Structure formats: structure tokens, C-alpha cells
Length: 510
Image (cartoon, helix red, strand yellow):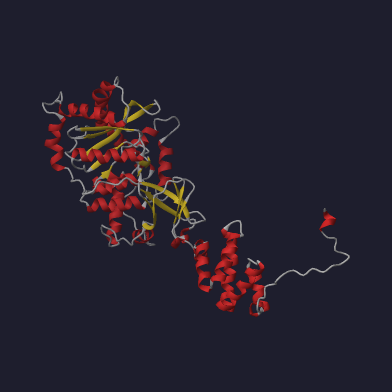
């Protein structure tokens, strides 16, 4: 089976990180892909003459055509199996080397033979058991996670007890720690925690190391985890990279696990008996305890976390951007038959040519934007009213646009240009209908009669129609076709009654 191609978002991230000066090894770790894959995509980009930043007009389809032309080239050497995973699989009952080699062979077109597979495994298995002690570089990694323990606050309006989730960020080199309480572990809270942590530290790390939480990682794949688009956008805004920990590998985040444990011991547990009535109150209490934690000398060193941070991490931090990141939610959606997409139960229009195609929705607190192949195709002011539609006229087909522009004022304005009698007739048409839309077709018919017979005849026909109470298109049409608009209209002076034997009179009915 051919090797699965990376998503275009991840390929763009590889090119961006290479432009920022990271090595192939660092890019591979940040994107959770193999170094050979990084080299392959960089080589393809070089052969295609691409550099960062990519041209704005280069959408995903055009980028695929440039990076993956019809002539296929092979880069690098044979695909090397993941020996650690194979070692774990062999512990399962019924699993043999032959079976694992067969599965490896089916997944890779360039594979090792069975004997070489066994030889390489024998060499690698000796290196799998020892644990490596990781030395963290200054300013390189910031580990982020939520604490296992939660805090409780009482809602003053309802008296209900609610949970507060504690966000923790710990530096790898200095152990300098930041913590704050969130009402939930939703995306907005997760991203907001990062923004305030960067402001607290006064800079940005080279790498962010989160757990494989659903908030930050959309697909927790062992080999190539896909980041939440908003999280990736945050990293791009601050010029950093995200390196999620591997699934079922707690040692990858040992630093933040220790940081979380410290926060639980020194911040959360001492506050367990205090009663809080809001998230802000909890954060004020955490701020006091956090200051004490970071300024207290560590047992194994004669320096505090803050002193270590000032000495190691702070001098090499990346600077904060001029503006803070604006939190935005992303959603993948299919365009409905009515050329609208749904976000938070509200419907926003896109160009009708995108019907039944998939688009990306980016929503902030003020604006909802829609992208197709990385190009913005629609922008609306955010409206959370459920069941309602926000529609731009230019997104409609011509026929829909014209119908949407129909309203009584438009037809009355047209009738006024014809004459006062026509205006009175049009007003009467709308008055005698149960709903204004029922009169649209009648008015459209009058507009057509005006183009055929002219303004003067239509005005004269309107006079006759008003006299006889004919508030309809057909009545005016019959008058014009019969030429009655040219006949003078004489109003009757009275009713003439004649005596007759067959007339019973009013007494008969009494």
C-alpha cells in the first residue's frame, strides 16, 4: 500500500518551520513525522521552486499539482519499521515476526526482506528497554496540560456548585510555572490560557508540548497527530511550533506531569477549604500561591524557579507579537443546497457556485469567515440567533437576487413614476391581499403592461380599474386589450327602477 500523503496544512507547516530556521530533525519532531518525510517535502518544494511565504493565490489544489506532478520520484531509502511498536506487538498472544513482517510489507512498497527484517529487529530490541534522561535546552520547550484535580466555586445566582479546571504551563529548563482556573476545558479556555501564559512569561518558546487532548489535537495518531486548526493558527501567530506527546507515552511529558503535581500540592490542595464564588476569585487566590511557589528555593538547588527562569529561559525567549492572538473557532462544513453553511445553529451565505462543496469556517467573537481552498469567499458579522440566516445578495443566483429585492415599497415607487392613479391601484393591490408577497406577481404584470402600452394608457386603465374596483392585473389587462382606457368614463347619476308584476318588493321578505 502506498504511503499516505500528509495533509496540505501540515506540508505548509513544514515549509514555514524550515523558513524559520529549524533543522530537519526539529521540524520532524514538531510535526510528528519522520525526517525522511521532511526531506522529501522540502526536496519537492525546492524542485518546484517554492519558498516561504507561499504566494497568496496558491491554493491547496495548485500546491498539490506543483509538489506531486504526474512523474513520481522516489526519495530516501527503504521504509524502516517502528521497532518499538513491533516489540510491543510481539508481546501479544498469537503475534509472530512473520505476521508483523507481512503487515509491514503490505503497507510499504519499498520494504526489507524477511531475513533482514529479523536481523534489524534483533539489533534494535537491545536499545528499546533503557530510558533516556532528557536535558531540556533553555527557552526551548513549554509543557502545557490541565491538572487532574479540580477546584469548586459556588454560583451566587443559583447556588449551584461548579467545577474549575486548572491550566498549567511549565518550562522544561527552569521549571518556572504558570497556572490559572478555567470554567471548562473548551477550546476558547485552552487557547486563552496559552495567550495569558505567554504574557506572564514575557515571551514565547520554540516548542509547545501539550498532551493529546481533543482540544489541541484533532486526531491523536501515533505517528502523525493532526492539530486543531485554531491551535495551529495560534502557533503560527506567535512563531512557535507544537509538538504533541506520543499516545500512551507519559515519559514524553514527565516535566509537565511533575509541574502539575507541584501545582496540585502547593496551589490546589491548600485552597481546598476556601469558598469561592467565581473563577476570578479562584485566579486571585492561585496568583498569590503561584508567586510563593516560583520564588521559593527548590530543594535540589539553591535557586528559585524564577531565578532559574531569569537566568536560563528568559534571555532566549522569542518576543511577543505586537498584537495578541484573537481566538477563533474552526469548523469543516458542507455548503447546503440553499448556499448557506451552519455555525452554532445560524446560517451564513457563501457564493452559490460552492453548493455541495466542503469549506472551512473560521469564527471569532465578531466575525464569521468562510474559506475554500485557503481563499476567503465570505465574511459575515457574527450572529448567534438560532435558525436565522445572514445572506449577502452577491452570493445569490441572479433570479434569487431579483426576487429577494421585491418589496411593496419598490413597486409603489415605480407606480408613482407612472401616475397617481397607478400608485393608488398598486396600494389597493397590496391592501386587499392577505400578505404583500401575494401582490408581487400582479405588480410585475402591471410593469410588463407599461412596457407594452406605455405610461399614459396604463394610467388611464388604472383610473377605470379603480372606478370598478378591479384591483388585479387581469382587470387592467382586459381594459387595455379592449381599448376601454380610450373611452370616456361617465359616472351614473342614479338608479332607475321600473314597476313590474314580478318585482316583489321589500314587504314580501319581511
